[in-house]
Length: 314
Image 1 (cartoon, one colour):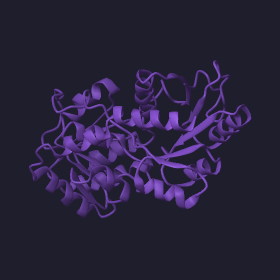
Image 2 (tube, rainbow, N blue to C red):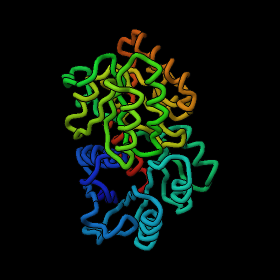
Image 3 (cartoon, helix red, strand yellow):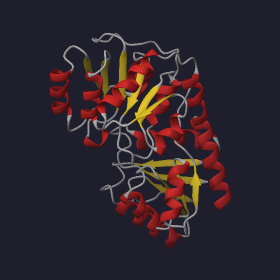
Image 4 (cartoon, rainbow, N blue to C red):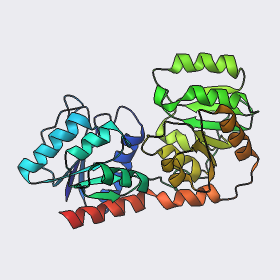
């Protein structure tokens, strides 16, 4: 079966969606499928379609909005299947995705599946999460030599408003921990200034390639994820847990489902509450609880579920 992923930013940036596309594609090939990723070199804009060659059996648009609409129309005209994964999270973009009436909408959590079914009960909704490669992200990884002292909490996220770094900085200020921020974005200068003011000598901001990330996680003692509640998932949560790091994250149904007993949930808008959760996470002995939780979400499991979905609906 030939599958086409439309992923404009694949090859130019490495975020959750791009990781999803690359990791899933590799495993679908191993399961006998033919896969092509159409990126910015093939697409004139985020909302455009490529010249399919060869014509795919299944199209999976990942950039939403106009791209999703055009992909669905192309599939209807050509009698092909269109599947959309809810990487945008419960909100306007995924509402639009659901209104294109794809052959299946893939919810990343049971919470998102319930939300999708409630919004458009006429669309088939399937639960398949994102994943992690436990052979790559492992407690065996060698830590980097950082400029900051232990204990270190790590936040892997684009330096953008949705990631709410300002709340995290205020929370870490109330602890004895150092903060390691990993990512790039439009708020880099603003976040750097805030850290210099609140956390002098206790922060470091770096960027790293996907290949370097196992060593980056291994340099920390706990991970944090104070993102907005409507964010769809958080692959970096799985990567941190696979490195056997506990996670302190936003107290919402999505993060609760991913983390379970492998960390603490708190309200980042209450920075004292979030700070206390960080301190408790650093003090607690976790054993292999985070690692075992991450193993429930491997990319091999995810790919097999997609394989079954494809073979049942085509």
